[in-house]
Image (cartoon, rainbow, N blue to C red; front, side):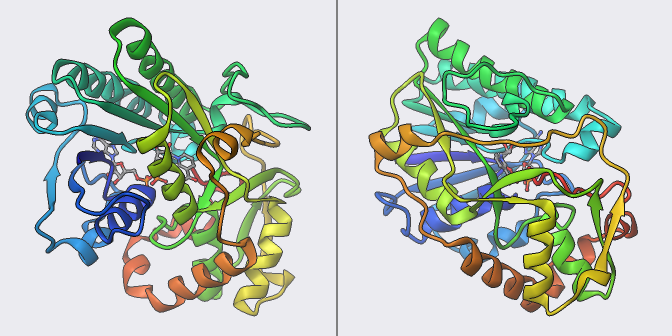
Length: 338
Ligand code: NAD
């Protein structure tokens, strides 16, 4: 199979590309991968260095909103796995234009090209945030989208366009919506790497409000295995939830990170809450478990320790990426990673 991976130089996309090319995802051996990535601040070619010399890998630097380029690059592929997005909620509160442009318009450009070149499959990677906030219980795939943050609204627009392309143009589209991810190579503006690298630098970690907001956490390798199952076996026109990890309040998470780093509560600093901060996300993952046999493999406690160790061992990767604003938590993201 020849797949085009958009946003393949980012956190999750690069994990998917590395795992695909190493043949560690089910049914991935022999796959040819093209990465299309604009290399925004969160894209990093170093994330792809471990597989950069492989013959079945090609990198194209470019914008998914560039219609001519996308048309050229899409030709000759069997499938698209679409990760490319603006992903940081706090940045979307500051300025939403690039979020609407990439997450909605960029998705439309890719869908058009996929239809034109009659691709066999389009996997659109999305997030639990499109549903808004849920005080208790969990959303299933039929729940209506009701996004609150501009990031989530722009992602929801992309999801709806993708599903519309299936219904209107018969494109073989599948949408995945995942909970918060964690693992190596995550840009240090996001919660777990922000807290971890702050503590490593002897700086406090900024927790929004009281820190009672709740999120579910899934290791990035589990997310990518689930995406592969959807790529190979998901039903066209369907949405699949990906999750089944661990639910924690931000305070509980901070406590586990501090413990992994050997630091105490004096390292926590409460900062004013984010405007419109969703209290809780929760996904019902029955569908992907029963239809595609997915369940997470990485226990959160083990994955967190490994992730902290990765940041300890890879200071040269993250140090140049950290701005003083991020370290001090202005804005910082203690509520969301995606
Ligand atoms: P990321 O910010 O680490 O990576 C995004 C990548 O997209 C970067 O490499 C960037 O250069 C690229 N990109 C941005 N705009 C582009 C454009 N116009 N053209 C081409 N490339 C562009 O993000 P991530 O955390 O890896 O998230 C990947 C996807 O997974 C996103 O669609 C996100 O909504 C979704 N998601 C993330 C999480 C999470 O916890 N991180 C959870 C659920 C879903």
